[in-house]
Length: 507
Image (cartoon, rainbow, N blue to C red; front, side, top):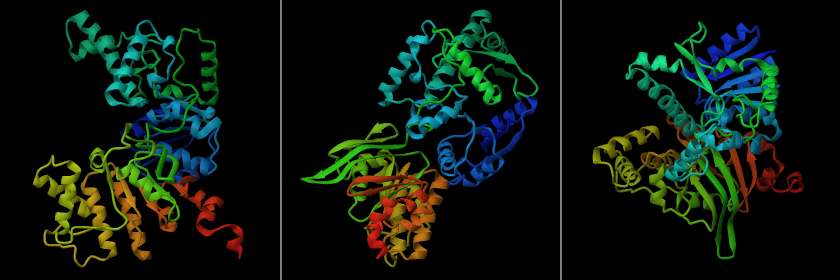
């Protein structure tokens, strides 16, 4: 049984990877590759290549989103094969979202982290726990106006409830004390049966062992997962024999689409008609946090109209636009901006009688809805100008800026609103080849340095495809392709809308 461990190189990933290595060594299971990567890395194809060379039977992946999504997309595109993948991290707990993306492939995916309580059969939970789970889900949905709960919401509630109900209350009841020693003594007596928590699992706290690296550990540790494919099969077989009233084990096949949490932006069935003309016809796509998505298509394909519907410039005829789980379709442009979505325009129209700094200060005030003072607005404006590589000198004016400079100012004004999602509209128009490459790298740098998610509308494919993580291609208002940039270049439908039918290209 050959194992491979890949992990984001922060404290969480490094710690779990160390436990994986220690447990693999204790069980004499060869670890053929152990390698970390930056969670903000825009490309993990080199890691996929190394894994293909080492050919592990079982992979263990510790990550967040978007790196979980990025790795699995590139692994599938790169032809990586394995017998099983064990996922560590809440991204792998979204079992209600995996099948739509990976189909039957998810039968080889396993999850160490517990799933969100809304995915469980509450009738199989312990006495009183089902009522607690129902109340939690309903209150969360009502407060945040969302249907799908992120896995971390259940984890946070569940861990807090376990502490209050099974540690703090017994400690106070037994000793009348809430000191660290009293809490530790109470914790060591915790023994929750399976089905005794809103996430379905049970657990106990055990004294530390040398390889655990901490004072205590729970029974459901990361190390328990390092048993290989046959061990997982035994877990599945044991669960099939489990009585009907008991909850399933934590280690079980994932059955849902691969998204770490709810997408940052979700567009579903978006339609926009002008009289009898349908400019956008049932467009659907989603954007993960930290992703750069390219929205491509020839002139007249519906790209800009789609953008305007998302940004509040146009009201959709039908469909849904959700940002951070909340519906924004039909909001005005200023309301959308203040929710955290900034946008650039294809044709820059700055205030030419104002300085660069003053242009950006106005944008900062607009994005904050007037809720910030002059000095804070200036600080945001200066930061945005530096990101766009423009001078923040109060005397620097708009006059004399060329096409590339005006595009940078347009970007700076959008950044001054402090968006979490940036809609970049045809940022390459009017630029020469060198300026196009510089503009594309600037957007990539902004994503990498600030974590800003970007949807980039463009009809010029070449430079854009070298930067984006994924592309959606429109034609006549409808989606004709969604996938990896390389796959878009090889897709016949995409080639036809840009170059014409094959017979005309041959001629």
